[in-house]
Length: 197
Picture 1 (cartoon, rainbow, N blue to C red):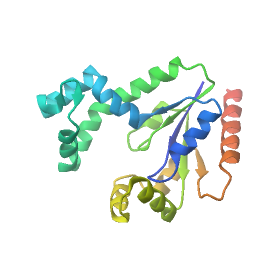
Picture 2 (cartoon, rainbow, N blue to C red):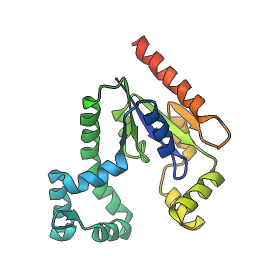
Picture 3 (cartoon, rainbow, N blue to C red):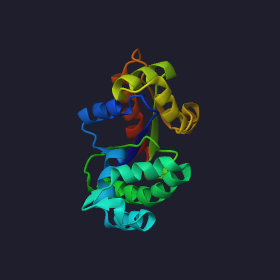
Picture 4 (tube, rainbow, N blue to C red):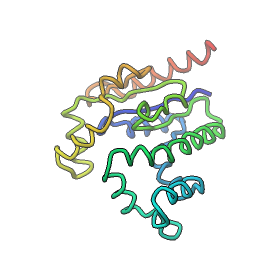
């Protein structure tokens, strides 16, 4: 089995690329969705968040989202503290999930693949890249946000050019270049690498 990590900036279209991969029978693990799930279901995360934030971190069995959000936005160091608790559990969950799949290729969608070190959990990394004006247009429409709000979120992520240099492959999602052709070529290269091992 080969594991590929799909990343890309806000509005790049990485979720859509993952939909196209699923159409080809490739299972996809969504790190953001699973992190939210694990913050509620994982006893380890629960214990650590309560230790960090106090018993109000949870209301019954549910995460106290307003409290967590307020803590995260109060100080940029706070996000690192929460990530130190959550990310190792998500990594282990992905590896457990991948081991249960019987497909020759599985994918992981992770917006912060390189920032969090999640590239260590996959064999190949793929950057979904789109021009900045197009990313801004997509994100403002999708999130019903202002350009300034989206730019502020983008500023918190790794520069896209740096991600391109780090990634093994790039899929150009500029609404002109054929996505299916790029994905087919990507899978051929990954399968070829698999055959050569």
